[in-house]
Amino acid sequence: MSRSAKDFFRPLAVGAPMPVREVPARPSRAIHFFDPSNAKMAGKVPGMVGTVDVLLGNLEDAVKADNKVAAREGLVRIAQETEGLGGPDGRSQLWTRVNALDSPWALDDLTTLVPAIGHKLDVVMVPKVEGAEDIHYVDRLLAQLEAKAGLDHPILVHAILETARGVADIEEICAASPRMQGLSLGPADLAADRRMKTTRVGGGHPGYLVRQDPADGSPEAIGAARTTYQQDLWHYTIARMVDACAMHGLSPYYGPFGDIADTVACEDQFRNAFLLGCVGTWTLHPKQVDIARRVFSPSVEDVAHARRVVAAMGDGTGAVMLDGKMEDDASLKQCLVMVDLADQLGAIDPDLKAQYDAIPAAGASA
Image (tube, rainbow, N blue to C red; front, side, top):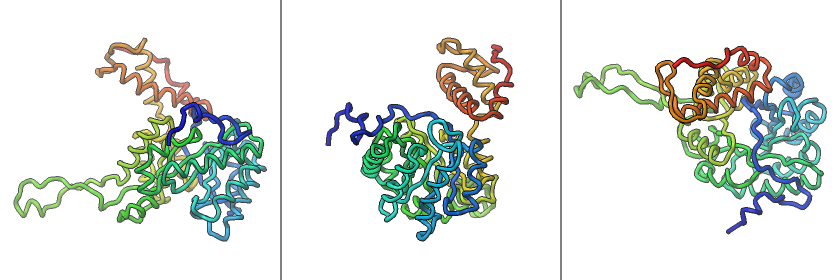
């Protein structure tokens, strides 16, 4: 079915706000999940505003069926009562993960939240997205609810990759609506849907490995101890997600890392995702927030080097030698990514700004 490109940026309901033409580049290193029906978790939210880039009220997995209504109502109350949470000028973004579209709760999630707190709700995370049709449904429904509520800016949509079909249809999902903000890896459900043989939530697996070649073909050499290297189960999916998001101007995120106690492996997984192009990750415990903020922020050393390259390249053409390494147009593009990210993060994180501002003025020695 054909559709005019001119129609893509028209509201899908009379009176709905104009769709965005470019997704706002708001830093979101940590998307911190909390259960709005849990009084202890809810009580910590006001104190986290301004210290966490995104606070996400979770209505789906980890919320029992008989707590769904309480979680929904709790999120409304928290959003209404917490200063600085959500909206274009909020010190922390407010997101929610609604229930799956095939559940009995998803429709009530949206019809309750948008009229009550739509002006503060930045992003709706949709789980188990299978294809563009799921995004089209949410897109139209949000437009109708926004018009009814009189909102002046659209709520963005974030899709979780949790099924094989969702990964296969990733390009169509990214292109389905101007509302699309980004994608997250959902490793647990995706592993089950793919029939992968792992019960871990994110991270690697000791059985997924490569082994050093034997010294020769003899039985003794083959049976001798050889070094093994654990591999990353999720490298392909993350790389595909990053490519799709880059093509469509969206933001890719690592999902949950379920082993809360293993902060070392958590940091490794977060850093792998950062190096591959992800802009942030989910955090399930406060100790993971500090890891995410650190890992998804460029180091002072990387920013200093990037600024040197930018200063040395001048108009961006040709090539220069810095510290014995050639830097050219491609190097400049890589460094501009780092410099731009540092500027964005420094605008919202005073500690980082102080560290970046302390870097000596960029200079280059050929």
